[in-house]
Image (tube, rainbow, N blue to C red):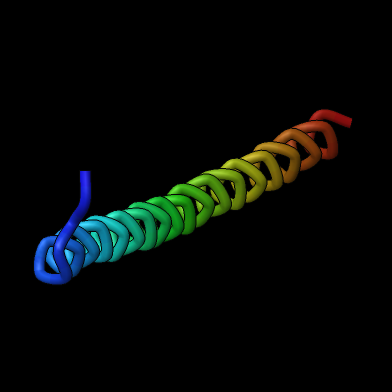
Length: 70
């Protein structure tokens, strides 16, 4: 099976198009995941900071109660 010049160029064009679309999709997926990973990290860090602050307030209240009882 022999390809003429025009057939070879059309096959090459289709292959290059598929490669470019594949790379574009790969970059898009990586960018999407990176953005949502940062959102997840930000949400988790805010939640941890809120819990730390709450724990600090709880410890202050318990120490005030201990001093008040003594």
